[in-house]
Image 1 (cartoon, rainbow, N blue to C red):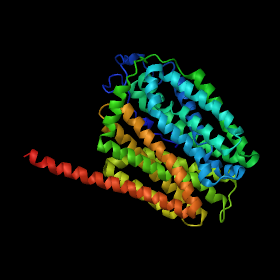
Image 2 (cartoon, rainbow, N blue to C red; image 1 turned 90 degrees about the vertical axis):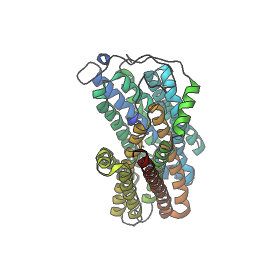
Image 3 (tube, rainbow, N blue to C red; image 1 turned 180 degrees about the vertical axis):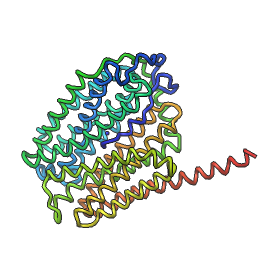
Length: 434
């Protein structure tokens, strides 16, 4: 859920959605919903912030520790990278079915169960006797966490007044970002002092504290109306989205951007721990403070689209990402850090443009459209982490950069194709308007 922004902030859920895979009653009256100043709003905000911190601290807990995990198990970078890729891959595969189950059993129940299972597994992870066991536990953890993002967005849409919804979603996404960043920083410094197993235990305890806070703070759902799950309708909605060429292009763009991001941040620890940098584990973990740049570029994405258009904003995002990749090839720490800043800024801007475009493009079944985007996004993370580590093991950092540039080229190609399609459609409409 990178962190940071999972794309879930673009989910639009409504009981009136004709393509919903369940049958629900009418939307609740507005005066039953929460807003700032009303009882329960602050509790709800803190609860979902805590859930976001827990989820994304757990999801990426091993990423800053990969060199130490490799050394402990005698595993290659490619093998160790599966401790991240297995979690994000399992989340990608499970987010759609679990979001559908939340329609039947309740958002609050799904979020509580997801956090409980993920935290329990997180407390077992430090005791994994082999890299295989560690990968397996991380896959279970990722699958459990898949029940949180879409359920949280649906809960907010049902329980919060529309005028307060953006602020409430923003706080949840902030929890995602802070959880992803703080988990990596925490593991880096704890590992430097007491080892990587202690670092994973610290993340597990942090997530446990957040899950307990969530359980006692989250208000009872007042406006949820359970429905009978209809797999055929769900399958039809998914098929409709996958048959929409524009949505498919947006899913591919999100996956490719995340491939770059996953590759870079999975491998960067290996590069910085070696010559000529020789950085300690704690400092490497602190590198993830660069994520704060993504918060700024995500917020600026709307203004970029307003000035440059969607495709123009994407071209700027890929150009920034490519420049960062090339700059990171230098053997100077300042150049590498500046490269990471540019990669992070470009990635978050591109991701924000693509994910928000999904919600605008899907006229029906927006929750499922967003869940499909999240699936593509996390599959990109999983592929990027694994392929980036294999490339690094084979050809060093230059090979990882080459992989990233190849993914960037894919985004450019898809965007150029979309531009040509849009122009052809406009030309086709000209005779009809005469």
